[in-house]
Amino acid sequence: MADTHDSRSLSELVTGLVGDISGLFRKEISLARAEVSEKMSKAMTGVEALIAGVIFAIGAVGVLLAGLVAGLAAFLVARGFSEHAAESLSAVVVGVVIALIAWGMISKGLNALKGENLNLDRTTTSLRRDAQVLKERT
Image (cartoon, rainbow, N blue to C red; front, side, top):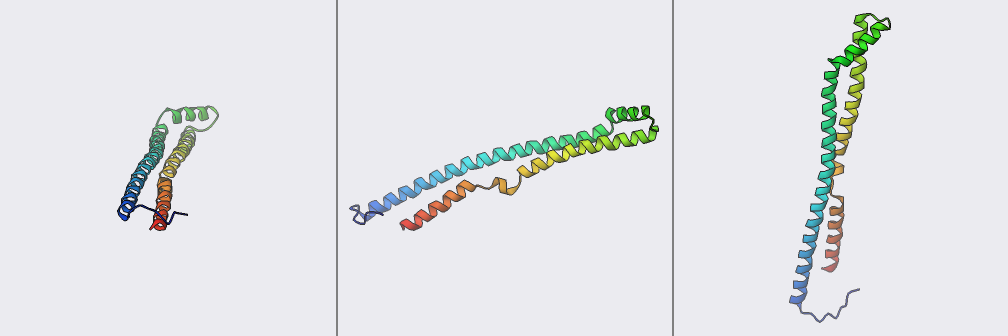
C-alpha cells in the first residue's frame, strides 16, 4: 500500500505522474512497433506462400498443355488405351495433382493472412493493464 504521508508537494507529484505517463506511452509505442514488425513478418510469410501457390496454379495450366500430359498419354497408349482416351485421362490426372498442390499452398497463405493472426495481442493487454494502473493511481 502507498505511503499516505508523502512529503512531496502537489506540483512534484503531478510532475512525477506526467513523467511516468510519458514514459509509459513511449514504452507502449515501442512495444506496438515491435509487435507490428513481428506481425508483418508473419504476414509476409503468408504472402510468400500465397505467391508460391499462385505460381503452382499457373504451372498447373502449363503442365496440362505440356510434355507431362503427352508423356503420360504415350504411356497409357502403350498399355492398350486408345489415343483419345489416354490423352484425356492424362490431362485429368496431371491437372488434379497440380491443382491440389496449388490449393494447399494458397490455403496456407490465406490462413497466415487472417485477421486474428495480425492482432496486437501483447500491446492490447499491456494497454489495458496500464489503464487499470492509471485508474488505481487517480
